[in-house]
Each structure stands twice: as structure tokens, then as C-alpha cells.
Length: 556
Image 1 (cartoon, rainbow, N blue to C red):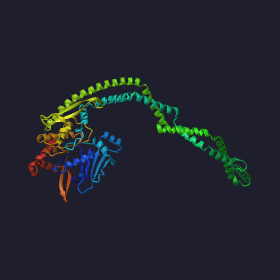
Image 2 (image 1 turned 90 degrees about the vertical axis):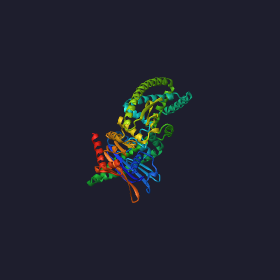
Image 3 (image 1 turned 30 degrees about the vertical axis):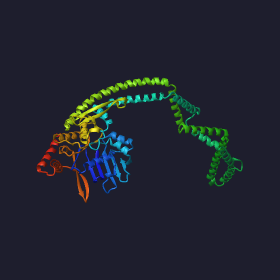
Image 4 (image 1 turned 135 degrees about the vertical axis):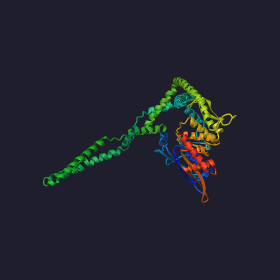
């Protein structure tokens, strides 16, 4: 849910902080006080259009920050993790609008894109009213809402799984239906590629071995000369290092018998002699193994050149080239045996068509029944919301080909007035009507994954007992989701769990908007203002108290 909203230099707002809480949050105030500007700020956080016109006069930037508590919503947290956003439960979203045009988006403390924010926002908040609904105005959502109302999500998922198999087989058949000439050219190309790679008889890891062997062959002369020369210096006759060391060791051995303190020196010389002798013999053996082989060097160079050519054509490594050949051979086999493969695929496709049709008809029949039930339920709720002549329908359109959603599309149609044919919501519903439509839908199908709902102008054109009913319905919705509602009606405000007053005043020649949460007598006074206008009497105050108490006790 939305816990905190910070707004700076936005329209007539200088600096504003509002701490929202669970349940029904109601915002009231005089016309023009800035209630709709707060909704504009929320809409900006949801990825709405940014304009320099939104920036307060005399300022360079406007900033809107929203803090969400997502700890109860594991699905949302998982989605954020997939986006690379670290979130321990609290998510901060921030938009900065600049006169220079360098607008910025921050999600979870890091820079983000407007597209990513818009995708995320759909799962955080829905706004219903004059600022456009993110759900009801998009026909692609109507089928989802209908299926949710009827509990058809599992059946729809079954259909989608069959459809995915069906689409995959269609894709395989499409490959087989390429023109014969194209298929023949493809076979020739694949056969050449398979033969070229196969002829190379690639071995995993061979490139590294060849590089090591080439290093030795290319420097064979130097290796032989240096190792043989070192052996000769160490062991090559009386003038060698070992010859000199042997004479030194013998001399020290003679005088050790005279002076025993030279015993350790004598042992050290004997040890050095033994180590140098071992090293000399190892160098002799190494030199014996070194062989200058220009023919083998050429063979290694040729092999490495071949591997490099294959890497440029097919894949960066020998292992990946081998895997590429397997894929080439698989496609080649499919093309060479396309008649047999086509026959098998046709059989599979027919079975999938039958399964898809059966599951699709089952889904369509249940949707048709659910549409009638939704029509009755929605019209009942709308009639209670002072839309006595409203007509609500679900129109289906049979798709020429099945899709993952089923065999048909669906759209909600609406008519608020008698004698008018129902039309798509986006073409006919006003802001207030749209809010009440969503409120009605939340009554008949309260389940939703969106934590926060915003209702703007939900009370447009209604009054009296109907207003109280709207408040009661909002309170019911707020039992499961956080609700923010702007209202001008005290009958609606009476049901608030948290009541906020939006005020506009002039300070130092500048207009300033503030928001204060009301309680006790302050709330009663605001309700009395909404009831009585400019002149507030004790009787009006008492009426306000009664309304709050009736809403509180009637909701039990």
C-alpha cells in the first residue's frame, strides 16, 4: 500500500507530505484547494505524462516521491527482484520533472526508465475517475476481469498450455512448408556446413593443446641450445661447474678432518653438488627430447588456422561449433525427412486442435454464463449507486483463430441513460461513472492483487441515501485493499477510516496547499462545513457527529 507521499514544487504545492494508512483514506476540502493536484502527483508516480507546466512558478524542478509497503505482497517482491530492484518490503518511487527537460525516474533508490515504472505501476495502484482508469478503459483487461469474477483462471491456464503446444507445432509445420526450392537450397547449405565441421573432426579442448604444442615447436632450436648449453656448463668435463665444485668439495673434506667446525660447510657443498648434478641430468634428458620438426609445426599451424576459420563462421569456441553441428544435423534431418515429419506433425496438430476446441468451447460456455451473472450483479450495484437506468453488458467477439486467451475476445459495454445503446466504456463513461463502475465491480468481484485503489469523483451526480451507500461500499472495498477517495459529500466522508482535509491559503503572496489528518472535533467541523457551507451552526455540528457515529455503528 501507499504509506507516504512527498510533493515539492508541484503546481501550487510548495512542499507537502501525506502519510496514508490502511483502509479508507478520504480527502476533502473546498473546490480548488488542490485535491485533484494530489491525484495528479500520484498519476505522475504511475508513469503519467510529465510537463514543465507542472512545475511551481519560480522553481526549476518538481519532485514527487511515493513510499510503498509491499511486505504482504510476495508476488510483487518477486517481480521487483526479476527487474533487478532490491526491496526488503519498502519501495521508494521518485519522479523529477525539470524545466531543462532532463526528467528522471528512480525506483528503489536506483535510476530507472519511464517504461519500467509504467509496467510496475500497474501492479501498485489503480486510479478510477477523471484521470483515466488503468484497468477498465483497456479492453484487453475485460476478459481477465470476467474470468476472475467467474473463477475461470485455472481453466484459462489449461487452455493457454494447450494453445502453446498448438502454436509450437504450427511453427514446425511452417518450417516444413517453405518452398521446395528454398528447402533444397537450405539442405545444400546445411549439408555443406555439417560436412565442413564433420571433416574437421573437432575434439573438445584440442585448441589449447595445439597452442601449447606450437609454442614448443616454434622455439625448439632455442630450447635445445639453452638446455644443452646449460648441461655442458654444469657437467661438461673438468672445467665444468660440477668439476670445479667437486674439487672444492674434496679440498674442504680434507681439512674438515683437521677442523671439525667445517663439517656443516662440507655437508652443504655435498648437497649442492647432488642438486646441481640432478638438474644437469634433467637438462640432458630434456635436450634429448627436444626435436625441431618443421613439418609438424606446419601441421599444427594449419590445424589452428582451420579452427580459427570455423570459429569465425560458426561459433566462438570449438565446443560451441560441435554443438552447432548437432543443431545443423537436427534441422537437416528434419528437412530430409520432411514428408514423414509433416505427417507426424499433422497428426499431432489434429489432436491438439481437438483438445483446443473442446477446452475452448468449455471456456466459452462458462464465460457466456458468467457474463449474464456479471450483468445482473453489476446492474444491481449500479442501480444502488444512483444509476437507475444503467445497462451493463459483456460483448463477445469470436476470434478468427484461437489465441492464448481463448476462442473469443470480450469487452464491457455501458449505457448510463435510457434509450441509449450500450457502447464501449472508453467511448461513453465519464470520470464519475467510471469510478462507480469500478466500485460496483469491486463489490461483485473484490479479489485483486493491486494494493491501492484511488477513486476520484465517485460521488459525481449523486446525493442523499445513495451517497451513504457509496460510502458504505467504499468501506467494504477498503477492508481488503487500501482506498484513497476524493469526495465532496459528507455522507461518503463519514465512512472514512482516516480523514484528510486539503486546504489552500496565501502566504507571503504565494498560494500554498496543505493536507492535515483530522480527528475528533476537527473532523466534525470539516463534516459540518461540507453539510452547511459557509454558515456552520451547532445543529450542523450535531448532524455531523450523528453521521460519523451512524457510519461507525452501521458498519459493524
